Image: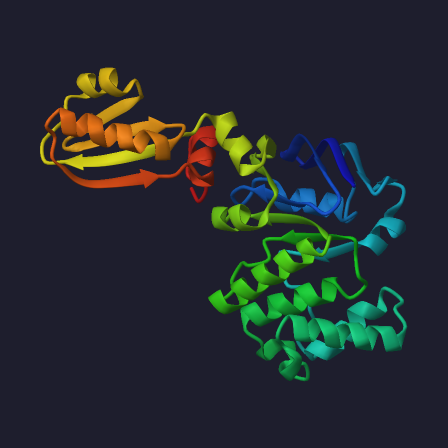
Amino acid sequence: MIEVKNIQKSYGEIKAVKGISFSIHTGECYGLLGPNGAGKSTTINMLSTLFPPDTGEITINGLNVKTSIEEIKKILGVVPQEIALYSNFTAWENMMFWGGLHSINKTDLTKKAEELLQLVGLSDRKDEKIKGYSGGMKRRINLACALLHTPKILLLDEPTVGVDPQSRNMIFELIEQLNKDGLTIIYTTHYMEEAERLCDRIGIIDSGVILAQGTLDELKRHSEIKDVIVVECSQTPDEAYLISKLNLNVKVTDHTVYIESNDSKKDLTRCVIGCSEAGYEIHHIDIQKANLENVFLKLTGKQLRD
């Protein structure tokens, strides 16, 4: 449904996006994960036809973003990082305004707005002005406005920034339901737990470059990240002995053994037996599962929030 080929975008001397490529299938939730300034919002702005790439090509549903702007806007719902609402309007007035820009007839727009207000849990607050809303409530109305024209593709740029836990969970559940119903979603975030929960595939982006992309399992394999079995003993184990005994990558620090494993469930038993046979009294065992945080650190050499 979406093809992005070697797009670049600069602002003066600053190269915000440096030749990235990816494709997104119909009904997929694709995540762009990276820190602030990585190029996520610039990519979303190009996808949403706000401005064209300097070089490269973007096609959406077979339409080129440089030549078919109006046709593409009809099938896109966009939730920008900055709240796009009129603060002196009520929620209902905002929805009537934004829905009216899509030339939806009044009867259909009213029905759709009522459905979406129910969906985002704000039917009882629809006649209150936006300036009195919490950050989470504003985000939920912003999302509802993007869905008024029943788009085929939803672009979400950091939709949970400044959101309270209740609103965040409601947004997650809504996104999951929309995706389950067949909506194609592009989701940018710097929160790894969001990407892990919501996205079918993830592109890790940093400094305007996509370093790797794929499912979580594919990213783990690409970065060669493994699970780590952590065994705390009563004394300092012999690292060389455990390496020869287990035939795994073993590191010992003080009384703690760190064992890398491709299959931690299978190797756990071997580790326990190996330590026991060597006479090490085990105090505690933990398995640190490979996750996006490990992958990002391995690919970029820094923590995501650095």
